[in-house]
Length: 278
Image (tube, rainbow, N blue to C red; front, side):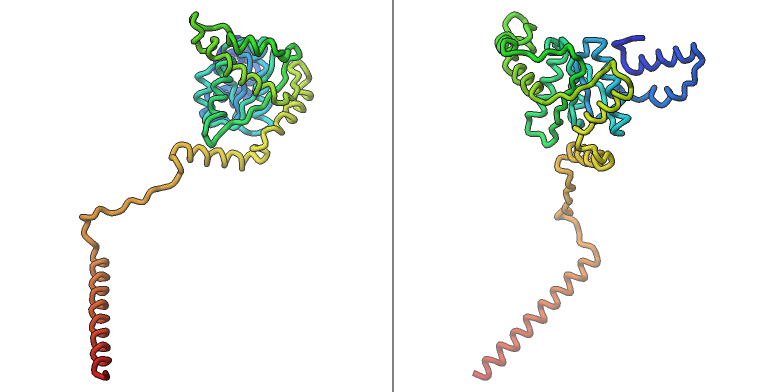
């Protein structure tokens, strides 16, 4: 099983095992071609410490349970490129806390990308939802933030100007503060399926936009259309000035001219009558 492989690769491995064991494959056929890798516009993005196999597995399990509960497309975001491609169409970004996550350079880049849109003037700003999925995750103290502001994550080109070096330290520290200020709901990955479903149901209450999934998805489609067509309005095109008027328009114009002549003659007659009486 390729633990860090794509969902398509993992689904192929599962199907291969099912074939070897001669198990019915109907349960896998509907999900083999779906998932975050093939989702064009997922509305709920899930991320965390993607360099850790256990954290990645928890994110994938959480994705399946959320989709089943909400009937809304979700995706596990593993890289900066995936976040940049999916973020313009997303309504929520879910971060699953796990040990070592705050020191993960890949997660730091993903978080900075998410904050860049959330802090912009864009009308569509995804809401941040946090989940405590690892009892070993420790909230950092003031020393961590001071170190982060001065040195970043220490990944630079020697001048401090790298993407996660000293130059990016203040921005990254602010992003972490904003992330950890959101109340994280619990998730027990090693719990029973009943406990997991109950916890996921509580977390899904945070997705207020999709309490009525049909209405929420309709709003998403409208927002997608507006984002692609500017203000979503159509512009009327005026006919060229050199265009010849149609026959109906010509007749109407002649009638207006005739009525104008009649009105002028009537006014002249009235003026003569008034003058004669004087």
